[in-house]
Image 1 (tube, rainbow, N blue to C red):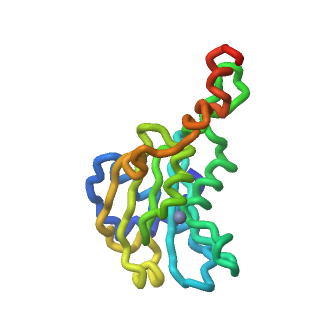
Image 2: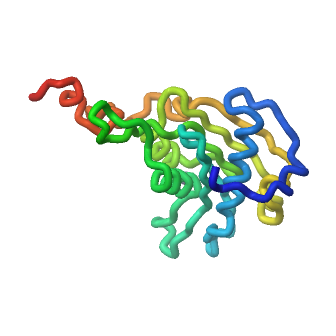
Length: 192
Ligand SMILES: [Zn+2]
């Protein structure tokens, strides 16, 4: 793990059983999300969202919101976390030729302060498989403004499978793309 915060944060950690990811992973994700706070750029809204992702290789990466003056170009914390993870760790398994990485690198998506918007859910779906988990922690915005996330008492948690967030999702399969980014007819050894 790269985004390891000082362990003084552990002093106020209160374990809570989380069915899908477990207490240890939840804590690592909270710490990773907090470590991204200094990069936060929200001079317009002042609204803080901290996110983190767990890569299939076990590493965790944080992200925070980056607002742009025209608003529409702003990047959400979840997107920043996912892009950081991909650029630092790559995407995942290689295909049989050893050349292309799988898109299924996203093991867990965590966000504190707000539920992910529709755009971020779709962004995450690109990298998910059927086992990808989401975890939303409800954190009071005022408290999140004042305290490091790991020192805040754990808020109500919503968790589940990412596939539950996008019923009937549109994804790479709808465009005939397999998990390695290849047109599926080519992956099966046939050509049209
Ligand atoms: Zn979003």
